[in-house]
Length: 87
Image (cartoon, rainbow, N blue to C red):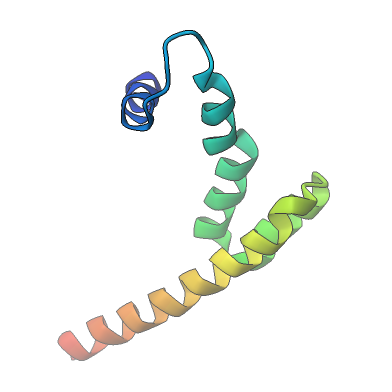
């Protein structure tokens, strides 16, 4: 599935077949970003910030806090909506 996703991104971005798309792909879907994003979704901003800090990914520290708090804000309103709908 990852290969298919990579192929779709390469087609949409117009990258050539000579291997020059590797830099774009590694910056777009870096393992560090996936790990911190997954940690934000599961544990919130505190665990994601702790993960970024422990591996010394200083560039991902602020985005982990921001994405985690925005996730909390969105989920709070969705929870209130469902509470009102099923009350």
